[in-house]
Image (cartoon, rainbow, N blue to C red):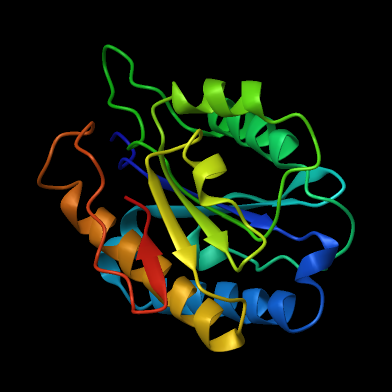
Length: 212
């Protein structure tokens, strides 16, 4: 029997020093709530697999691609700079390694869904990695969180960019709730549409705006 097709979901989270204090605590709580919420959804449980990549002074995959029931939330700390380029390279390597490609006899995984959140300017060379990742079969939603982030810069990575007005706990909580709704909607819609159909996202809450 062939395995069911997975929906790989990657969270790329900025854990630089400017996220220290309330923001990183809210991100921890947001990831916890996100996983708990997805575990109540039968379709997400069946298809969604989760991974977390953090970036600060360097980037690392702190949670490999794992089915929801087995997923362990990583411990997140905030310090250091903002290695966005390294994070995108890490994402590229993880997708190449973990996402199953289609073969003549079996369909591979669904197109990965990536949520990238950053609150500041990259401190490393990121442009080449951004151009490479934009060419890949990945749906990326980038979030410019708070006044220090540059939404226009994120447009080089993806057309789907949202802005968070601030880094208040309630705003970050609303963002992760919206991420959860987006994953649930995607896990439903991929069953009815083709694998390359653009991802359908629910309307964001008032504290989150799409960048035109």
